Length: 303
Ligand code: MTE
Image (cartoon, rainbow, N blue to C red):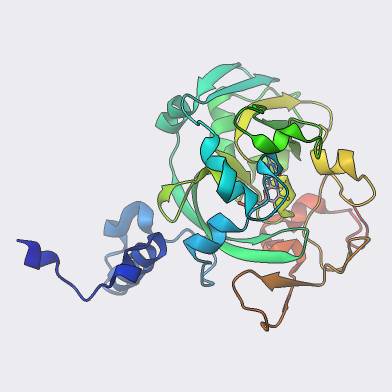
């Protein structure tokens, strides 16, 4: 029996990205044979980029997650201390069904799919990340948004016993973020729960983190425990810390430099020491999908 599964796979192929690449080839083959439907949820989403994804190792060892320290390697080193089950999430404010929902309860209601997105940090590095997740709109519709709601506020867990970076006041804890309701309801906006088809590692924001691919990475708040629908613009941590450097909207924009560095280009993580920087795209390459939400805003200005 074992022979049936024998192939020319090497140990290297049996990494999450090895399996992922094999599956991608299978999907391409199935699509060529007109068998697209059998691939079901593994079919590439129309929102996914076909750029080559970063490796599992790169995505999970070069992180920003100040709850575990400010170094890029700190989250991987310390995030194993975080317990993610049970994981109650308080959803309230201007919603029809406010309450505390456990993560598992939410997952039973949501449809998870793969989204391969560009990810651009405000520090001018970038990656291509194969997320698994569900549309935030599905969760908001599940709890029912009241007509008066205009914004969505998010908060990360505060648990200094498990999040050792919270011993320092680098951020006024909890880490907070917010979106305008139309941004939150946009089909590109997801709650990521996986990477490369596996459960999302703690350092990437387990069990559930926001991903808003046309905005700088700091908007994509990790390990969310509270979601509040409001009628006023909520605070966001980096804007609170350095209001002249980080705005509320924070859409990726190569024409608006950070006060201390250029945003015109970016360094793709994993490209090696001598790799050329690549030009940063307006709205991180999602202009066709999202620009209409910002009509009337001057794209040369800082928001
Ligand atoms: N969420 C929380 N709770 N704490 C953080 O420090 N850092 C943000 C964002 N979400 C951060 C956070 C920043 S600056 C970036 S660039 C991304 O997470 C990094 O996500 P990644 O480590 O999965 O690449």
